[in-house]
Image (cartoon, helix red, strand yellow):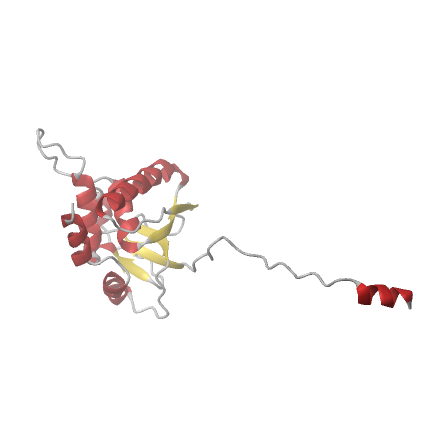
Length: 191
C-alpha cells in the first residue's frame, strides 16, 4: 500500500521528444546504362551488349549528358594550343552523370576511386559556377562480373514503377528525370 502511495505522489515528468537532425535516406532505384555515348572510349561503341535486365538506359539517348560532359571538358582547353581530337575524359562523363541524371551511387571497380573523386570535384566546380544542384556521388564496389564492359550500374532517386524497355526508359528518363537542355543552357549563359 505504501508503494502505491509513493507512486501516486511521484511527479510526472514530461517526456522529451527525440529530434532527428539527419535527413531521411532517399530511396534509390538501380538502373543499367549502356555507356554508348562516350567519345573518349571508342571500345565501348563497338558491340551492343547481350546483357538484358529491367530498367536499362542508353546514354546516347540522353543528349544532356554529352552536352555537360563536353562543357566540363572544354573548361580545361587552352586557347593558345590546338584542340585535341578527343577533349573529354572518363571523369568528365561521370561528372555529367552526377549533375544531369542525379546519380547517387555508381557500381564500380575499386581501381576507379581516384576517377570518381575527380568526377565529383569537377561536378562540384561546374555546379557552383553555373548555380546547379549538386550531390556528391558514392561508389559501391563491384567486380563487373557477368555484365559487358559497356554496361554501367547506377542508382538514382528517379523512381520508375514500370520497365518500358531500353528505348522508352531512356527517352522518359531524359525528359522527366534529368536537367533539361534549356535549363542547362540558361544556367551556362548566366555567367
